[in-house]
Length: 145
Image 1 (cartoon, rainbow, N blue to C red):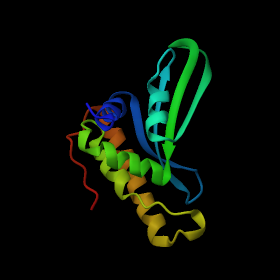
Image 2 (image 1 turned 180 degrees about the vertical axis):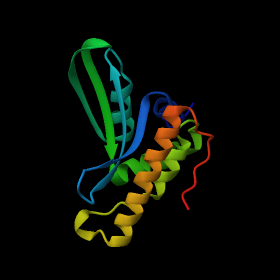
Image 3 (image 1 turned 135 degrees about the vertical axis):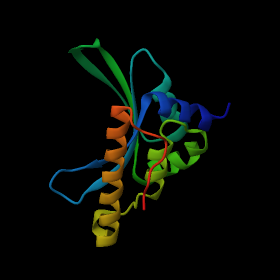
Image 4 (image 1 turned 90 degrees about the vertical axis):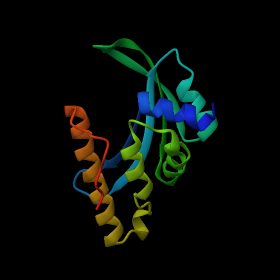
């Protein structure tokens, strides 16, 4: 199995592909992340093989217990490049990945109205898709038109 196929399985099962938005602004950012309770080597493996950011954090006691969380994340154009590598192997998060690939990446100082509008549109479509998934209504197809 290739590293890309393994990573896709991790993202499909334990990861998140999303677009962050700072409330009250026109700032949007693409991210992919995986958080897992220790002991695990998976987030560190993602960092070693695909770059991004890695950290371990103490988790206070909650419904899942307490302990240490390992977190890997990758943002912006690096996230897009990563998604491009794994997209042929994704199943459950394929629609989100397709949206992420067309998400315009631009620095805030070079972003025009068209990019902001497209970012907002994709952000809203991804939220709708997540809502359908949460309700069990997702049929595997997304309209980006």
